[in-house]
Amino acid sequence: MYYLALLLTGYSIFYAISLSLTHFYCENYKEQKLAQLMGIVLIVALSSLQLSHFFYLLDSGNLEGGSQFIHTSYYVALLFLVAPAFYLFSKPLLTANNSFQPLQLLHFMPVSLAFILPHNIAIQVAFGLGGLYLIWLAVRLYALRKQRQNFRLELLILGVAFVIATLALVLGFLIPIISEKLFFTLYACAIGLAFIMINLVLNYAPKITNEVVEAARETYATSTLSNIDCEQSLKDLQTLMQEKKLYQENTVDLYTVASELGLSNHQLSELINTQLGKSFSRYIREYRVDAAKDLLLSNPKASVLSIGLSVGFTSQSNFYEAFREIVGSTPGKYRSLK
Image (cartoon, rainbow, N blue to C red):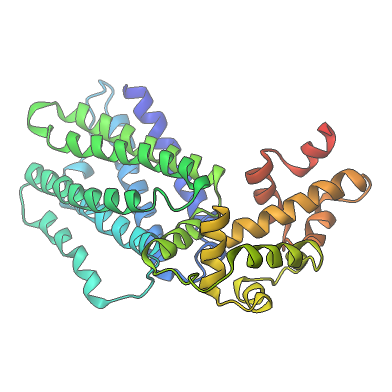
C-alpha cells in the first residue's frame, strides 16, 4: 500500500500539471470563467496535498514518515480549501449559471479554522464540511441522470469518483482509531484514484464541461418547444448539415444554425438535447468526423491535417481529440486499418 501511495502521489502531481496546461484553457470554459479559475485552484490544492503526502511517505528510512508540513495549519488549510473550490468549480457547470456573487467567497471562510482548531480536530471538521458538499453534488448529478442517453457513461465514471470521495470522507473520521501513517497513505491513494477517474472522463469526453452545461441548462429550464414542430425542425437541421454543409465552417455556432432554422439559441439547444440525446457541440463534431472519415479513405494522399481543416476543425489537436473521442482511434490509424 505504501508503494502504491507513492506511485499515485507522483502520478497526481504530474497529471495536475498536464491538466492545468491543457484542459483548463479558454476553449473549454468560454463562458465559465469562475469554473475555470476554481478548477485551477482545486487542482493546485489537490496536487499540493499530494506533494505533502509524497514527502511525508518518502522522508523516513523506516517508512514511518517524517515530513512536518502535514502537521502544520497550512496543510489543514489546503484540506479546507478543496471542498469550496470544488463547489465553486462545479456549481456553474451543474446549474448552467455562471453569474458570480461576492457572497460566494464566504465558502472559503472555514479555511480560517485551520489556524484555530487543534490539528486532528481541524482535519475532521474539514472532512465533515466536505461531506456536506458531497451531498449537494449527489443531488445535482442525480438531476442530470435522464438528460441525455449518451451522458450515462460520464455519470458512471463521475459516480465512481463520488464513491472515492465518500470513502475519503469516512477515512477522515477514522483518524482517532488508525495510525497516522495509514491515514495519510490511504488518503494519498484516494486522491490519486480521483485523478485517474478525471483522466478517464476527459479521455472519453474531452468536451465534458460543455456537455454538462448544456445538460444542466435543459434540466432546469422550462421547455421552449411547445409551439415548435420538432420533426420538421430536425429535418431542416439535417438539410443544413448535409446540403449546405454548415459544419465545414469553423466559425459555426449555436446562434448561426438557430438563425438559419428560425429558432432561438435555447430552442435549438433543447431540440438537439431532447430529440437526439446529445449537445450541439457534440452534434457538430460528429458531422465533421463522419465527413473526415470519408475523406481519409477517398483521398489517401491528402494529409490528415488538411482533411481536418477542410471539415471545420480549427487545429490538428482539436481534430485528433474529436476523432479519438467519437471513433476510438486517431485519423491516421483509422485510415491505415481501413
